[in-house]
Length: 104
Image (cartoon, rainbow, N blue to C red; front, side, top):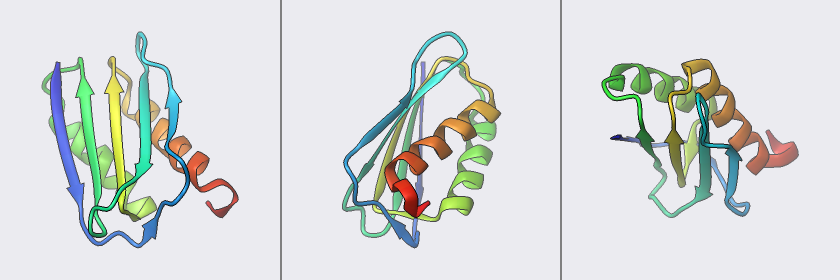
């Protein structure tokens, strides 16, 4: 297992809803927990992954996600069992959309 941590400052979209979990950890998939947290305007992402050595790809996917959503005061935890970057993006977008509801 590998643990990756990313922190993005100065987001513009804060979350206020109850924490949400999307996805299921299993072969080729992942689980995303998203929650509001007082992080001084930052978005914190922690990834636990079975796919060791893909840090550069994870970083690119996380940067793309944060550029799209500009989250602030958000904590995201990901448990991964080898999902593709497309599935990661889909699940993360799904988590934000679930948390924001109609405001997305």
